[in-house]
Image (cartoon, one colour):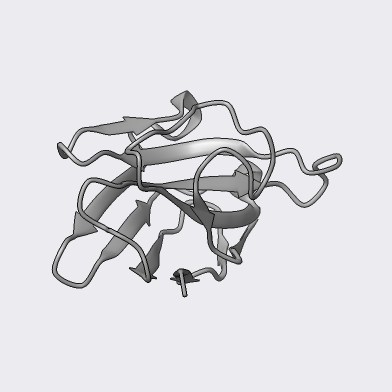
Length: 130
């Protein structure tokens, strides 16, 4: 059974930091692209945003709105992907979803939670108060 289990979501004040974790199991981790997408609480329908991805060659990509504030990293031993978030802003409030793709593929366009990438977690909520 494929599982992506996220943790680390919390409520913090603006300017604070959080570290999200996502532990993978049940699929071929090596060679997979691992990343994070988010869905704002008032987002219409299934609308979501790309946040960050780490590819099998170690390269990383970030959405412009998180560059310089978020860092994605990977622990191949524990099959865990992390998202260190700093200088958080109220507009970062969202449910953050871990996603994985065994083809090593990703898109910076999110068609909806559960779409595109092969596997998705259930999400972890992040709330930033001003």
